[in-house]
Image (cartoon, rainbow, N blue to C red):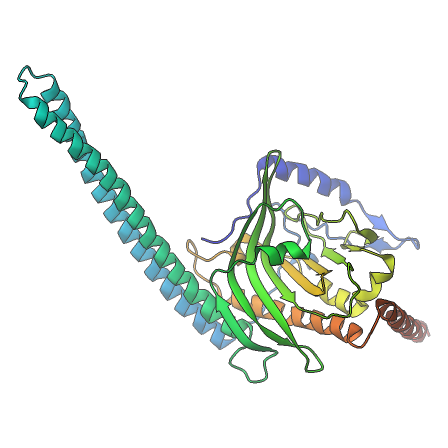
Length: 406
């Protein structure tokens, strides 16, 4: 249940070769070593700082995890019961079907012509049994799916209340709604992160309003999704994770695009909807595209630092930030174990804690970008404003370095 990010052996071997070629030690113009995202484990995950991030869970999160595991056990027991019934009934019907076929063959070979009617009846019964087996299996499948949907609804409905802090009057998210399934295909494609997406699935769709740092409300939506390319010679998931979308501002010029990716390891797929974009920065940590060079500072230094602060480890594969059609998109590419609903293993409260922290960071990114751009009438003003801030930061940094040297 959920989304899968498995890759073929050939894909992993090819990406491992590329990773090894790109993991050579790099230095800047001063001969200083450039830190890279090349600490990749045998499974293809980047582990920044050598360890996965750990977050202390609250009592509320631990309590929810216990209730989720109770529901998980109920779901597992129910599905096992249905499967056993299905095996027994299917087996019994198969035995009766074999008997019917044997009788049909035996009676068909008999010299008594009166047996022909009996043979026809037996064959009709056999056909009805085949149809009955198919219908029964289909009904059982529906019951299992219904149980799975109930289990998923419970997890998502309870988790989002904590993750978005909806019961807190001071929460930055208002009028939050939840749908297990919703058609958000076009929303993802409008981000223009990847091309050739021809299979898409989304769950856990959250909507509402987000409060940015001056009290302004902006519409937002978040959803878990799998975006897949399924073509001959190119097959597999390009993005599996959580996407946040904010109706950010109407101040941007028509056609302005920004696309930023914090790079990951072998499991990370580079953004590729870049035909009309200019690459302004490409280093071992991240790659940054804009539709015009003057748009570079739309992502201020603070927002870039916040994006890069989302740590890559066993849970997160890479992070993408895009601006297109006056919407801001932030995609966190999660690992299977994090994004999929737990069935084979118990639910861990750290999933809720981590998701809540990521939402808080996403909110800070939105606030940083909004604060930089909130009062401008033209994008050139953003560039000018950010240049001034950059000069101030550089001056302050030089002062601090001078003091430290003394």
